[in-house]
Length: 194
View 1 (cartoon, rainbow, N blue to C red):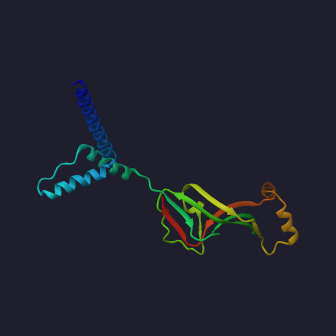
View 2 (view 1 turned 30 degrees about the vertical axis):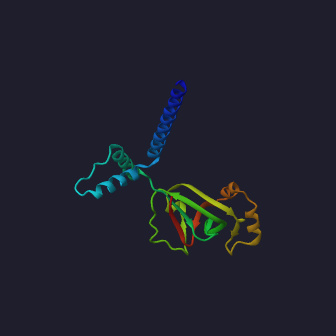
View 3 (view 1 turned 180 degrees about the vertical axis):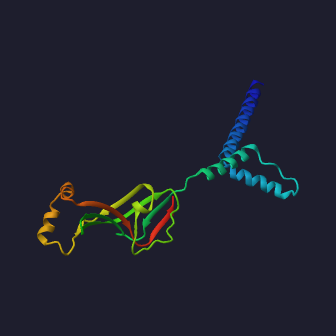
């Protein structure tokens, strides 16, 4: 007789362990399902019985409120970049009286991140846009620049051009030259939400 009771006890323990394992598995499966599917399930069940709609559970209501709150306070940001390569130019313009010297550096690509969707209705792709004047942004990047190429006025003699090229920025300022820098995007622009 003692052998039978031991077997019976072992069988009961195994059955109990199996039930616990099934319950744990079911709990994990329910916990993993998002609140959105719980809403669908409630609606589907109530749709079968017109007039007898079950109210959504408290956790489903809270999840819906949280999603709505996150949507309203979410800050949208936009990435603006030229569609074509080599459409980003950084131009240093040195001026003195009626003379102007430009140093142009072209970049393979670049982008800026803005907080509001920009109004580009008056944008002319041929003229481009000075990004520091047109947009308010904190983050930008210019990638893979080419060598700077100077553009001198025709009335400036060759010897004077070479002399000015050998001067540092501070020496140019000491001689009365003023600097204005412009970074331009030109051509078609890509505006992407991020």
